[in-house]
Image (cartoon, rainbow, N blue to C red):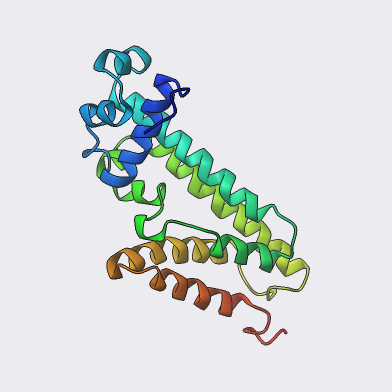
Length: 195
């Protein structure tokens, strides 16, 4: 499954990331991680103190990747509206859900301040990044001056996370796409009578 050149700790982290996304924390047993990674029990405990330590490394990696992917479109050239649109329309595995957002529904992750920290930091970073782009758009006249940047950033995040839920519930990415189109229509200059 993994490259022969990938180190054992890397295989363990990648396996844990996949299993957390698919099964959640409770459903991700050390045995399942070891089998998925093709690593023995001794290897796992040689590199990590235990499941919580490995899960933390996996959650941090997932959070870093999500931030890098988001920054790739939010920091790209284009107007503030175009960058928000690119973020909303970027390629996602909609039916699997958000690998970070899904962790907020995992009671074991939420109950652990240590495991929850990378999740909270990522959501806070994304909300702040989006709010900054909305502020930039207001200054350029692309977004109405009356819009509250923090509220719009929260709405963008809620649309994405809620879109995942709707898509998973219906078994179709169409629900996600509909939510994105609706939000973009509200944010577009033409939709607000500015265009």
